[in-house]
Image (cartoon, rainbow, N blue to C red; front, side, top):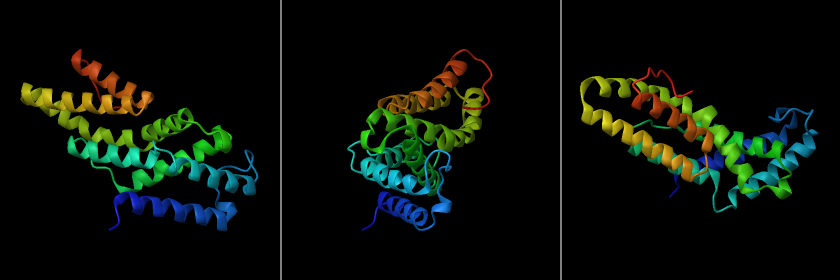
Length: 182
């Protein structure tokens, strides 16, 4: 039986194959690498990313499940696929594929989370405001959920993303106005 991970991984492979077949569709501008070099980088990066114990796709799928269980947001397939594409391209640009390390992967995953997933948190803001107005107990639950997300992001070494959640938590604790996680 196929898992969501399998479906997403298949989509990433399909995308990589499309790039390979039509190098003009390569998402990385030619000023960085030739099209052929980019394709080689993408292949090496993909192999390294998905053979790693801290596979970013596993991390994002687990994070999506966690966010759903906390009733914060439901991530769709597209956000995860686009995030992984971003991670692959980012890693292709910032490092030599033969020397890719976990720090590079974490940096790329953090940037992807900020670009594709954190904006989805804005749908959680009305729930936070409503909880503050209506019930202290409900406010505590929403703050606890956000704190848990921040801690999960820190465990994944997604420090920029965790810092944005922390900034919102600080505003809530200090009764400051908060509009967005961005």
